[in-house]
Length: 306
Image (cartoon, rainbow, N blue to C red; front, side):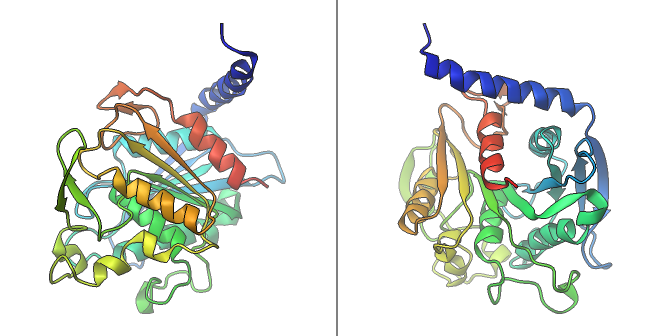
């Protein structure tokens, strides 16, 4: 028999998921929204929740797709699962594109920050509370989400010149959700298909993405989220599968350790039997050992509360 305390946990979670499912049919999808300078082709997709009651404003989350900084699309299945879940739970959700491939850094980061700015600049239009915005991402998108959260207003990490499309609008976020993102491009290691590290250094990305000369190029330190953690960094929720063969799980352990060292609120959830590229419910199109929707929504409710 389950203990009473377990029932107390299950009942609110079950009630939450019933509410999410009930609202899912009312969410509105608006694709291909321009949010960068006119000469840029990248767009974002909006997932709008059921409009809140008059006088109420919705929190918002920007989702950043993965793909090794060189590929991936904002309309990936993972984005649809996660942004759909968020919209059904009452969040305005965005799945954003960003510059990919050779020379993408740091424009890719600037683009993600401009997605946050887009929401804040259009807060009235979409009935968003501009003070309740979070960012989330998977894999390379997790890395960029962490960088968005940790480098607000930091010199060299914000767009300049013609890339400034929202002057005076902040890219600050209240919380970050990181799904198996590289946290230290200096300490990544290769793994086998089951996530066991072999001890060999794995550079942070294709050198051409970062314009790096070699694996010891200073850019890899500058582009590492752990480099920028301070006591004022936003809270972070970390998800990582125990058999991730793409991003070694040590990346998330390192991130959690640095957050703890600086006294930053965080949660680290290990997903048993999951590899890379899972969403909130499935990996390899199969249900995971744990439904992550209640965990993610509880974290956002805690840190994006009124």
